Length: 157
Image (tube, rainbow, N blue to C red; front, top):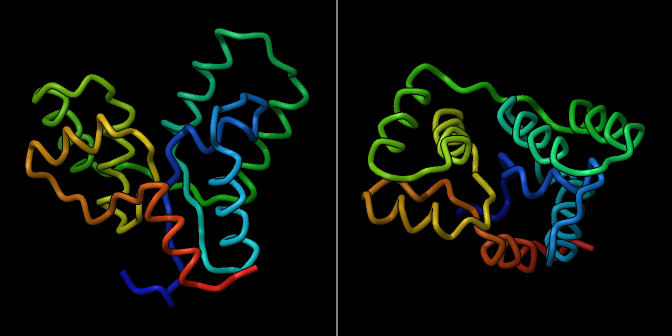
């Protein structure tokens, strides 16, 4: 991975949840790193309609602050770029689902990142293990550990 390029990163929904008021355990350091990369103009963050669908699913099960959700969803739309899945990505996600991975949204995020040449930031070790066991491309997977390595080598803020 080239440490001087601008990183294009599709975020797993986990990293978007705090924006709409849903706390995620042990995420503050990673969010701080993402902010550093963004503020240094070294990263562009992406989301998909599936991220929004997943956020809405989680919100529908809890008490939420409507105003905070509106502000958060607007911020996602304004600050991040929208990436759409491709037909090939849909088919690939279905094929992977048939191989046994249950979370179709994670598979759609993975295939969307592949199709658009984006890194996919995820902490879902089950997904990573499944992809590895099925000899799938892992070059686009960005773990939090790798993110910490990148930021430390960049010497930013």
